[in-house]
Length: 157
Image (cartoon, rainbow, N blue to C red; front, side, top):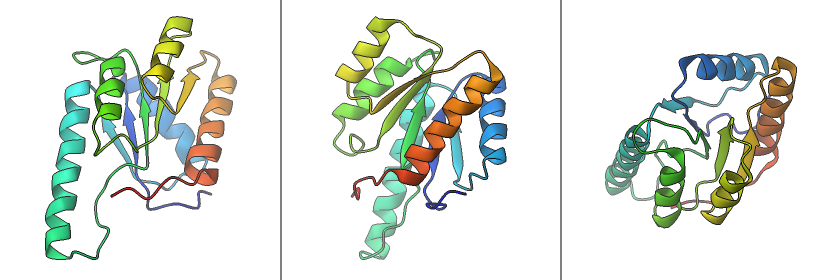
């Protein structure tokens, strides 16, 4: 059972099947965190901008509150329609409002150039989606154990 139940997770995944499998695995692992999904790069930018605007508006009403649905971690697929994951990673890590959010790439690409590029652009982790169901379960469990339970992220403004 995760300890940080209130901290949302943003999953950027265009494949409905991959998202359903990920969601099912997390349910079986008793993940209680709210999961938000975006299916392309434009949605990610819009979602995060809306969260920033909502948090700003709420902080104006209650300056001492830390309200907002800012994700505690982003699980990012690379191969997306429109603005791809590489571009999203680059944009978010260059934006002072979002660069502190950990981004874990979750993709089928095992290309060493993709791995190197993602780390150069500021990725906090890189997970390759295994095709084998048992290996996928182990990979998702490792993500949940570290990013949703063990890791202590910085307090973001």
